[in-house]
Structure formats: C-alpha cells, structure tokens
Image 1 (cartoon, rainbow, N blue to C red):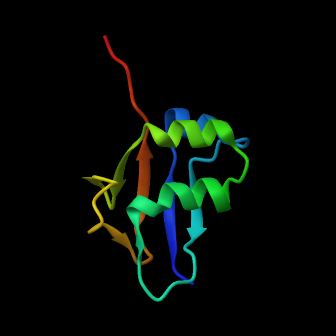
Image 2 (image 1 turned 180 degrees about the vertical axis):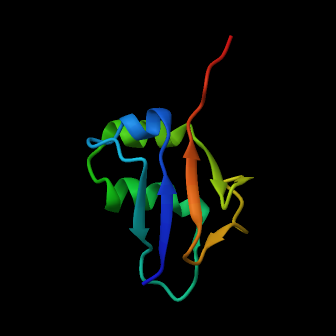
Length: 94
C-alpha cells in the first residue's frame, strides 16, 4: 500500500490530540493515484475521524508536495506514494 508523509505545523499540529510533527499515512487502495484535491476529505473522513478542529483548519490550508507549493484544486496533482505533503495553515502578520 502506498504511503505519504504528512508534516504538521502551527494550527494543524495543535488541532491534533498528541500534536505530532509528522505522520505517515497509507493512501487508500486504488488503481490510480489519489488526487491532492481528495486528500483533505480522506484525512478528515478516514484518518482523523471526528476531529472537527482538524477539519476546520484544513479547509483554510494551502498545500505543498515535496517542498513545492501546489494548488489542491489542481486535478493534475496526484499522490502515488512516497511524497512529503504539508498542509500549510494561514498565518497572520503585522
């Protein structure tokens, strides 16, 4: 089964009970790669089931895959396994 590594920072990290810095997640069984646009739903529905704080934070996140910023609505971004994915929460500054 293919796996990805998720890196968690700031609000994403604190929305999880044990505040992990990273997590290895198995991708669902499928003959085709998982579109990044489906990853948020997979994480909320299958991996961190019932965590409303996590779901709310992910709704506002930007995403990077293998240290490159990507658009999670771009159907061309698909996860095959082995990628490092980071949901990047919004930041405020002054």
